[in-house]
Image (cartoon, rainbow, N blue to C red; front, side, top):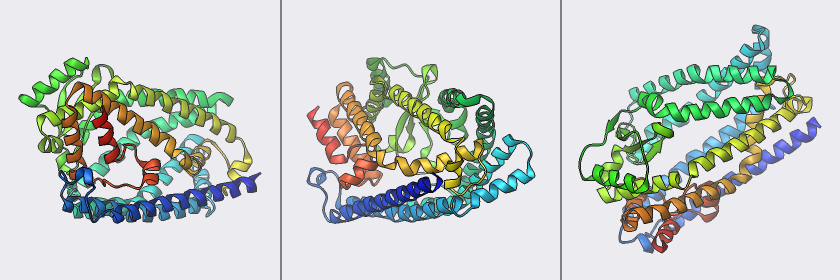
Amino acid sequence: MASLFATLFLAALALSTALRVWLALRQRQHVLAYRAAVPAEFVDRIPLADHQKAADYTTAKIRLGLTELALDVVLLLALTFGGILAMLDDFWRSQLNTSLFHGLALFASLGVISFVVGLPFSLYRTFSLEARFGFNKMTPGLYLVDLVKQLALTVLIGGPLLLAVLWLMGAMGEHWWFYVWAVWLGFNLLVLLLYPTFIAPLFNKFSPLAEGEMKARIEALLARCGFASSGLFVMDGSKRSAHGNAYFTGFGKAKRIVFFDTLLEKLAPGEVEAVLAHELGHYQRRHIVKRIAMMSAMSLALLWLLGQLIDQPWFYGALNVGAGGTAMALILFSLVLPVFSFPLSPLFSSLSRRHEFEADAYAAQQASRDDLISALVKLYRDNAATLTPDPLHSLFYDSHPPASIRIAHLKAC
């Protein structure tokens, strides 16, 4: 059984990697094929230089992504068949007698390896790729401060959560997976509640939206939509990036609406109102609740599946890990799952795009359709988003509809 699963895993890894590379190369070829001319429906709104910048930005990200993919595959094989996980497991077993702290140390070791491998890519993406196209505003000092804060949050929040999960896996018998699911679900809901007021301010400054035409229009929109929030805030996103966005976060009385300062600088009041109407459409159409319910059901099913594998010696033997255990089972499962689940990506992307269409339709009812179209075109242009994605690549990866399809759908509303 171990040899069969090892063969299946290697075959799935080869196929999923080949599929990812093929899709990336299709995207690159498609974007470059249309680089010379702006699509007809955008020719009066987006200059050729901006269209070509988007094409070059897209292809640069593809090159980096392919390099990351190659290293991820090498790392995955090194951790499993290369014996690194088994070596780390043996080392920590010899140093720590308590299984909980052995598991915590094993996860910490894997986290350090992932961080060291990923750091050069993160630095290159931030200070070379993003800077080359005029998006990076982050200084090395701010980058370092962010890293320290993220590490602190990982240790202070992730450490106790991981200990609780490992304890439940070992103490709750054959139905441990249900208890872990309940704790995981409760943790995620708690983060949604606490993130706006306790976590996000650690990284960004949030200022109340100033009085004026824009605030008046937004408050009128909220009244029409029956949406109550704890406040309207502007986030200093410009200290890290030139990309713009708007979102609302939290739930219940903790809901707050946040605008990137870069967004407010680029859009007119009517356009900002239309963008917010789209975000409110997600709330009014209950997309957030539906996504939470879907992710909850999926996590329950996956934890149940892990519960069936955790006591199977072949699961560990197939991946070149001799000794099992709760921490090792969780690590192996998290490494194996993406390999087998990637072909399902179009299903989740399709659902997300359907939600975007529904939110657009809602926005067209509550605000100006033309203002939303104008805002979207500006955001495509200013964020250097390609107007000509490959249809198959988009099918797998894009959570939002391609620009031409999305705007055509809006015009038909």
